[in-house]
Image (cartoon, rainbow, N blue to C red):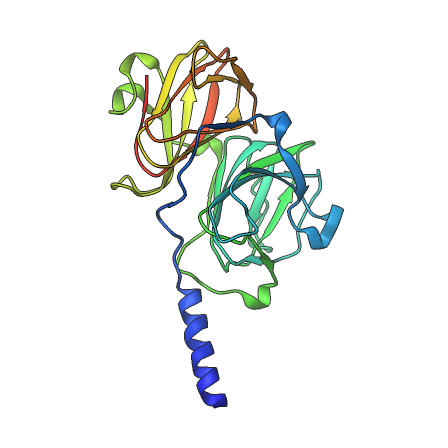
Amino acid sequence: MKKNILVAFALLVGAYANAQTPTTDDIKSKNEVVTAGQVEWGWLNPLRGDKSPAAGKLWGDRTKNEPAGFLVKFNKGFSSPPHIHNITYRGVVIQGLLHNDDENAEKQWLPAGSYWQQPAGEAHITAADGEENMAILDIQEGPYLVKPTSEAFDNGERPVNVDQSNMVWLHANDIQWVSDKSKVETAFLWGSHDENQLRATLLKLPAGFNGSIKNLSPNFRAVVISGNLGHQFSKKEAKNELRPGSYFGAEENAKAFISTTKETVIYIRSNGDFEVK
């Protein structure tokens, strides 16, 4: 009996360690807006209290087995103990300087607009060095847990750190789903552009942009990384002013009317295509 239990446990651990991050999202998004001032804050790791970074909900519930997006704030000088997570997460720096790597690695301070990916099971530390530090974290499954490095495993995915200066931007005339006249640029971050597959991009809107984004998939979520964004689902409603850290979701075939007064970068996570005009 004991032998059978050990075999079953070994099979379970093996399956868990080799599990890949989901590539689709079955939870349909809805038309919603969360301004930076409306974000509800708590602790990222409640067991550590105020020694933990603060976490602010944007969509989903990171404590459940579902996709979620949330803001994380770090104090200057913060440095976590070495740890792992049970699931893969991806992050974009909104403010300050962040480092995420092996505990013995030299600090690679990522400024606003940078991107990183932390695979499930990979041992690492996270540190912050700006006066104010904030990022958006995106998970495809949950719950988001912090575990000791003694439970480290290799799920086949690899860490990524991309400084904002190394982003490769495509211009509007290089992209089918962006109007040539818009002067919009985009940088691909992760995922697949196969049909119905999750993907994420950064969208850079020039100052004075006045147009729209139409969602063509079941799932569309956007977070303002820098600049400012005027947002309406209807030109008859009041315009929301979205500063960095703000979020909006959109239903399939919904159109969001957007405008900028200065260059603005948006993180967009979708389960398919969208159009910018």
